[in-house]
Image (spheres, rainbow, N blue to C red):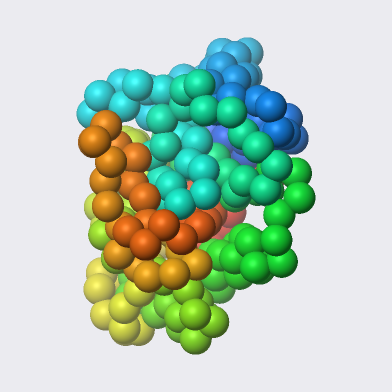
Length: 248
């Protein structure tokens, strides 16, 4: 688990997080019918280069792109390519930034053109579940408190909370301990300590929680074909709670 206590370390992580937020905001703003998912990846790569940062996902365990672009039933790890976005799609954008060895993650889900009321609610509720998970993260609390808050909000509303994937520690590497499930019991799991750097990321479907991995060994889809959403922030744990560093 990355634990940062020096002000210089905290400042470096905040700088990485601001780049993640700025890049993803600009990429999201360009999303429209007629663009390919590769177009979005190319833009992310250019923006990261201009910011003197590196994409932490590119070549990580063989991942071939700068950005994860997951469409409709794709939960996470969608590989950009020639797929063209169309009106009514739901697209999740997930970016990892490496700024001088300081790693942050950030993800959002957005509509492409006009989407249904149910799709809008899925996106809004997934984003709300992230904020509830962040609010549940307290120094001296437990990792299980986060997942319990997320699950407790989503499942009564009929959503599937993905079990096979989870949030994680971050900061000095792409993935670090601890694992942060989006489900579970409060007052269980590792203790949350001051300075911990966490990537909290609910991954949610409009149907069942079961998922499958496609033949490319990366793209994870909902097993029942239902639409998925994904939001993620990187936070530093402080006495005031979880400080979101992947926002502007």
